[in-house]
Length: 100
Image (cartoon, rainbow, N blue to C red; front, side):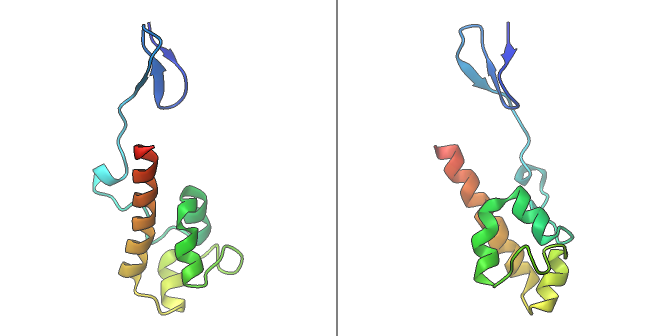
């Protein structure tokens, strides 16, 4: 008999938690952060990206409701490099959580 403990774990008949399989955003060949996502959406979904936003002097207050594509244009940022930095922060955080 399996009892659900939360979204991703279940207790087996021995009572030992077992991980349910899941599909990650990276395994779907999708970008985890889309160019049409707003700064606020990214920060809510991926708080680990705050250091990247701080590095380029962006915050959720002024322009937080703008899409990343618009923000990159306004601040003369290379959109590809900006997205890569955000995605790298997300990937590193996931690796840390997985190793823990």
